Structure formats: structure tokens, C-alpha cells
Length: 230
Image (cartoon, rainbow, N blue to C red; front, side, top):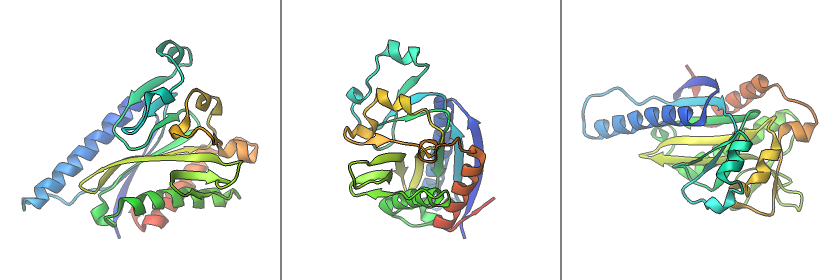
């Protein structure tokens, strides 16, 4: 059974967390290159990082800057920052009350299928929501987790965007637990104009215990991928 190192980074600046991810990611990729060369090195390690970020908008490689509806001055007025980053997907928002999860996994320990990996991330969130009585699902052709996804009331509760190289992953999940949803009004979330966003707080009409939800999601990830934490 694969082993995964768990770290809770707490509330952390987006760039600081990105740099930390990149450091682990590069070291793991380089390690795999050395292993392929036949050099004697330690086996790769797997990490899952949980955190929250101050208000920030991030644009993926396939995204359109026009989907950010704020000027630089307006970003500052809203105490938000903006980064163009190296994950897949379009624009999204992170902020306090949103649970962000960065799995840095060597999929050679699991399975070599990035689409299956995305579905497993989605399923972990779907199963977490079910614990709280929220029924969520996927929408064909749209990565992420949705409530009433195939209806006119479709609303997104979790965005997912990843990067991988040599089957090593980074970036991951933005799960709206107690998010300030007004910040989503400043973007076209994930480039999708006709669907809204939601949070656990909005769906259940109460503030959620972030530590408790984190514990549930942490467990569901381990169940889905069949690993143990160390």
C-alpha cells in the first residue's frame, strides 16, 4: 500500500505554497530521472498538502485573462492578488474558507492514468459532501464537482486543476467550504459563463468546521487512492 506524507500548511500566501509545491515536484521528477538512468537513489515520496490562501485569482495555461473582470487597481482594492500559473484549466479563485488540497503524487505508485486521477479527486470530494447530506456529481466534459449539475440550477462547489510530468502531479483541489462567494463575481469561473458557484456553508446554511471537513476529505482521499498517511 502506498504511503503519503500529510502536511497542513494552514493559511499561507499562494506564491509561498506554489514555490513549496514546485520544490517537491522538481525533486520528485529529478529523482525519477535518476532512477530511470539506473542510478541508486531512494524511492520517490508522495505528499498531500492542505491549506487555505488569502484572496487570490489564478489563471491556468489554457485560460483567458479576459475571464478576470478586475483591473490591477480593483484587485488591490479587494485585497486580492493574481497569478498566471502552470496548471491546466482556466481562471479560479482561492481565499479564506476554501479548502485547498495539493497532492504531489508519483502516480507510478498508483496508476498511470491522469483522467482516472482527476475522477478520483472528484470522487473524494463527492464522498466528503455525502457525509454532510449534500448530493453532488460530475458534469460531462467539465472537470470539478457540481450540485444539480445537469439542471438549470447547476452550481460548482469544487474546482480541480492539475499539472503532471513523468506521472508526478501538482496543484489540485479548490473546495468551497466557507468561501466568500462574492469574490467569484469578479471572474468567469473556469471560463464557464452560464453556471454559478456555491459552498457547503451556502448549501447547509451554517458555518462549517474547517478542521472537521479537512479530516473527512483527508480520509476519503486515502480510501479512494488506497494509501496510508505517514
